[in-house]
Length: 317
Ligand code: ADP
Image 1 (cartoon, rainbow, N blue to C red):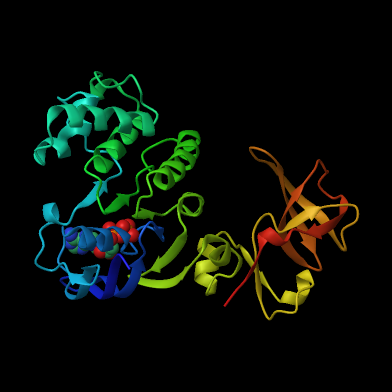
Image 2 (cartoon, rainbow, N blue to C red):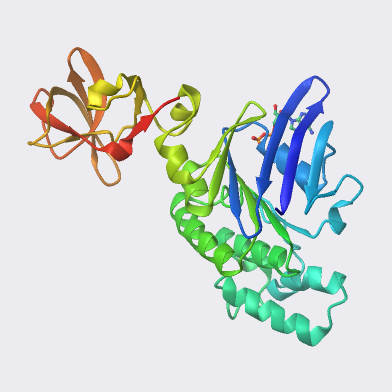
């Protein structure tokens, strides 16, 4: 076992930012800390990095307590939301920074920098000034810089949040690939469930300082531990399982749970129609209650048949 958190609590005065968190990250594993803003993700990440001291609890690596080990001796790589590159250095200068600090000789340093720039898709950028790069390119440089000294753990705090949506989705896929190619052990903090599910082998959901659920993405997505988590993961309505033909007490419905389909078993009336990026979103009335549904073109007032899409349904609790 690589990283082990045992009952970590972090208090700032009367605010308990992290409450009794126990979690492990295995060798080569990518774990996402996922939760809404203010739930304690960054505080936990900073505590692991050594930038904060836990009020109680133990952070250990391979069973060795890290309490007395300062940030720069933990051999962890850090990437923050805004990259925090050195603006007066070139791309290569930034990536080589950690290697120079470790006294790696020039030839080896240059080789490593080139291979990392290739890994992050920035071949040919070595001599550029970082101020001439786009936000996405800057984050790639930050990642290459963090990976350069071969950290035993990579800590990423909202690494893609400062980027616009299209770029973020693309970079999430690239990041997932390169974390695997480099066989990196990583902990990534994010409030975006798509990002967490794209990147991570396991997702730890945080709420008000606690880790409330840990599991592989598919499991967390299909069976959130409680209503609050289900809401955070996109469920907007909660109904008895029988509503969707499942023998469960309660299920959560996402906006994609119901779909207009002539062969569907339910019937409803279209109340509203909204055009989205790649589909039409409907509000339908079924048996006196309102539900969201995915539609093809229909008119307000139309009677439609609706089928269940199980990916949009979550078993809750
Ligand atoms: P997240 O990363 O999930 O957005 P944070 O870890 O940043 O959450 O914050 C968790 C809680 O701790 C919040 O209530 C925040 O206001 C508080 N907090 C974070 N850092 C400090 C600090 N340095 N001093 C006082 N309170 C803090």
